[in-house]
Amino acid sequence: MPADKERIRAEAFACGFDAVGFAAAAGDGADAENLAAYVAQGRHGDMTWLAREPAKRADPALLWPQARSVICLGLNYGPETNPLAGLDEPGVGWVSIYARRRDYHLVLKKKLKRLARWLVRECGGEVKVFVDTAPVMEKPLATRSGLGWIGKHTNLVSRRFGSWLFLGEVFTSLAIEPDPPAADACGRCTRCVDACPTGALDQPYRIDPRRCLSYLTIEHKGVIADDLAASLSNRLFGCDDCLAVCPWNKFARPACEPELACRADVSRIPLDALACLDEAGFRARFANTPLRRAGRLRLQYAATIAQANARRPDLPRRGEALAEPAARAAVAAPTSRRERGPVGSKPPGGGRSGSA
Image 1 (cartoon, rainbow, N blue to C red):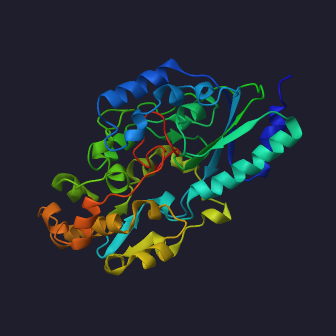
Image 2: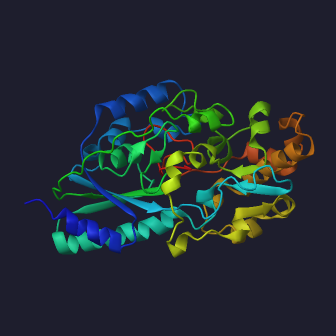
């Protein structure tokens, strides 16, 4: 007998989620083909995990054979102010909206586990929870569950929350009636494509992460080329340009989850102070935030580029940035990475809805 999905939906809202949808735990041939083409073209860059276990990524039932249904959850992280405020501000580093707060993995996983425990207790079956840490194509699942559609910037767009949703899933062995999939509502709009500082959105619905500023500041392991470094301006971690200009953000609202409150010390980072941080200071200042993932040396490398851009925006950045010892060390010793989707520079499968 199918589980009572409206009762499950109500409990998900009670757990603090802002969007809930249901999809069948079945693969989609188009998703598999898109991912294969993406990897074959080398667009995944340093994100080598995307080339691993492609069949499992495209089919939830292969990832966990007991799965019959997927409960897709969204948590709003809408900004309170203009997300692009502070770009080009001399002496201060800019950070993506999603990273100015507690690491969303920690916040979502707690809520997902609460919902999963309730589901087993009240409805039975088996469960597994995922939040951007396993080979799950989250954005296609979110689209099939009705949470939103994948926009021309390759991130999820919600009619209620615009570009600002964190995504997580509960896989269950229960049979739950799927929700209708969301229809694409981008129309003729190309604002996100036009806004990309580097042309990484080389055509609608397709991104080359190797030119994406989010990829370059979060995922990339090596030197950032001069032409791309010039486009960084004062960005330290991520880029929200394509997300921020989406017209659907007019319906967005600020995040109301207390654990996702923006931190002032992360929202505006003085470049000189960042350059002076040792490892202990870095860990203390950025504890439990996404910036920990980049690592101190990589952020300091981005800071040297930002300082070079502010001093002489007409000069090459790479050589000047690499004159700093911390920058050279960052390139020589890239940070370790978990098995997860990229942040900001979204492949066909996803991660969070936008940032990225």
